[in-house]
Length: 117
Image 1 (cartoon, rainbow, N blue to C red):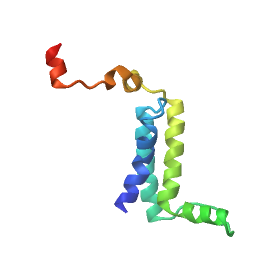
Image 2 (image 1 turned 180 degrees about the vertical axis):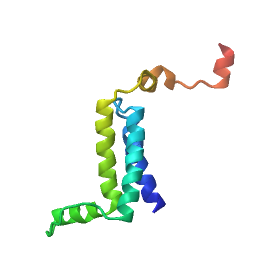
Image 3 (image 1 turned 120 degrees about the vertical axis):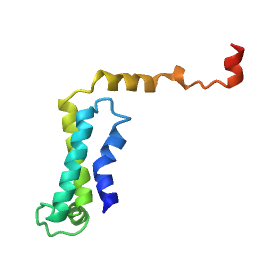
């Protein structure tokens, strides 16, 4: 159960954070908070869903949706995207992405090269 909580809360911040410049700090915290509350509430009660009686792929999706961990990941994904679109990232976050893309910082010099300079 604790791995489910960890997965629901931090999956999208780990996946989207480094790769999408639009992710803001409030969006990350909103995603974590919504995921934690959603997982706790749905674990104690039930996952709200439509009662679809079908087989095949739709039936599989319905069964997966009933698990709080899978539906929680969907809800937190929607949360992080919506809040990121509403709240722009700070200048500090944008600066981190610029540093991340700077190829000149990839060169690692040995100690001898630094002393010889």
